[in-house]
Length: 373
Image (tube, rainbow, N blue to C red):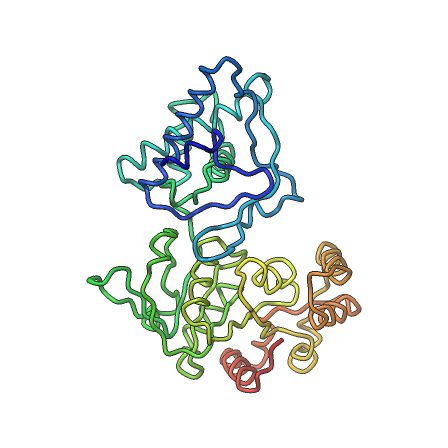
């Protein structure tokens, strides 16, 4: 506790900000220190309380919404802050919202509860309607508090929603005396990934799989789970049903640490790989994800011309931007250049031209041949 008192009102660094995954007692301690330091500033002869560093919410500061997993104990959130002043009428409310949210989260932690952001909104709408008139104000204030206290949203007692599911050759156990979940027996819908990052960090995992396959689309995940791909190729299937949420990213990151010998393969559309697929997965999960397909050779050999779709202007713009950037490897750029030149795209579902059972055969063949980049 002594070290905490040496810090400023909050624990933010205006050049780097990460959120620790902490137990409730440590989060309460951070809140208590922040309050005490704030009161000390109020009582000083030269109070320094006029400014509060809050997250910049511009598109250029996209790390705020993505939350990059940096190692096993914390999440990097942002490196960009702006200032809100308690003394200026147009920014004072943002300042006050942080303290209101801190009070609410402290009460939740004392009661040892977990709440959703929606529940917080209705509670704050009743308690402080002049400060919290919309769900977006609640969500943004939680983000600011996470950054300022440097603790994860889950550590604050706010449940992170998770869209992710997992299936295949993976056994999960929350605690030593609890039931073991067999993800191979979870059906085509898969086993829902919890939004509790603290629980995910301590989850006991066992597997005899040889591959982890990240599936971008939920419908494709369901097809592979229903056809039990993992009985033909020993693998674990995981999806976030689109853009990956933090809980799903965190579980994949944990699996990459738990099973470092397993290659992680990404099954995404070429266009989807631009927006939420392989390049983003590599960056966000800080693990080596290889692109299994759907790639240019697959499209040329397996997808009929009638199944190709015109490339949307926005997709074309993103593709050209990535080709000219330095963040992608040359083999990824080659894939994008072919797509740009053709002006067309193909979705994984186009492979159903060969029958609904073809997708499993396609994946199995590519894995056996190590045909991924």
